[in-house]
Image (cartoon, rainbow, N blue to C red; front, side, top):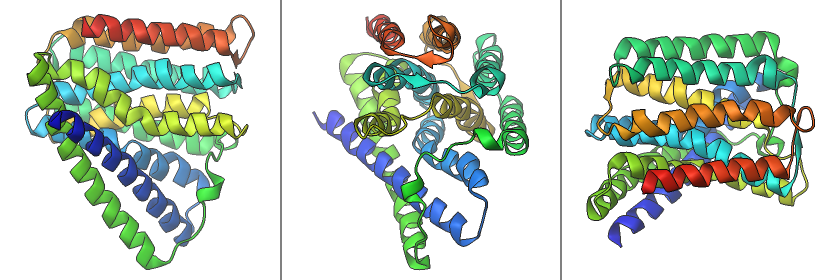
Length: 312
């Protein structure tokens, strides 16, 4: 019971901390007159991936590398199989042309690169992490130079300036909440794994990954209920790219990540590659550049099948 309480409290702190960090980051960039396009692609992406990043770094440093890897692999599967599925079951979305010209190819490239780095030796080394972060930087530069019109502001209501003391307060509280939340989440997840005799990897790809995908899920459902533009496919794909290249890249630069549970290489990573690839035919069939409730059901069934085979 204590472990579940730690996990729930940890997730609440991570989500709240990420939100505070986002608020302060947007307000700070407005104060410094940084263009909105730069904020959206760097500051906001980084802030919304902060829970995954903090959890992965702490897990790897504390000797639980499978939690770090499972968190990212599971998060990527959950973003498409759970968050996107729920969104398009509630209301269909139109897909931008940038999906097949930029977003999907880069996500597949990042996924295959991660697979190549870790599958053969079971370790994500420091130089491999550097390659991933450099690739992310090049991707951001490309977006800023050539894809400006494709970037949509998802949260215009958050774009309000704050006084300096509030920015500092939100920044400080956000940092403390992320740190405390990661401590509680890792402690609860490891305790739960020990109690039920399952590996940290299984907890990572199920409980932890769904927890760190909750902000995206909440935003999607709220957008659909308000009949506003639902969270875009581009944003979820962007989150997956960021999870691999930034979260795993930065974590492996700080400390190389070694696979402890072979299930990650024999099972999880193939599910991640499979569901990432599946998005392409779903977008084009039966109606071009559109995702509807039938596609959502397919993704949800794939996700539930993944969870079933991972837990059993």
